[in-house]
Length: 137
Image 1 (tube, rainbow, N blue to C red):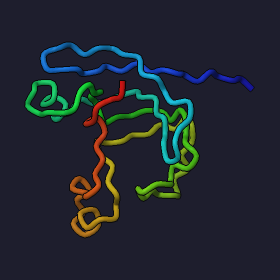
Image 2 (cartoon, rainbow, N blue to C red):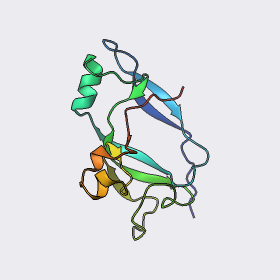
Image 3 (cartoon, helix red, strand yellow):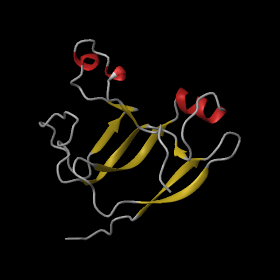
Image 4 (cartoon, one colour):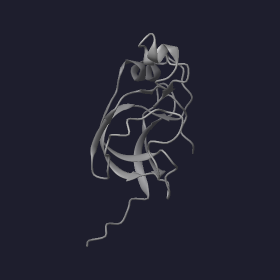
């Protein structure tokens, strides 16, 4: 069986400040994934209105950050149990390395009144947004 070497770094276009060009930067990939994590090789990422507001200075976000938080990619690695943690997941999914996946800007809990009663996961009490936080250097 052919053994492929796993990538140890990724390249990201990093936004540092308004009026400055994006910088291509190598980002180290984790040696080991935590429980509940996936490592996805991005094929496509969208730049949406909130990204444009950040670039133009109309929206304040912690910098440096990587824009483009909605995308399509291929699962490269899977953590020990992607269905664990405090976020509900559909255990019927049979995700595996090599699968193409898509995701959006936010991850909601699926349990709070905003998610269940009001059907507004974008207003979740524990909403987590991708692409709206500072990257570690």
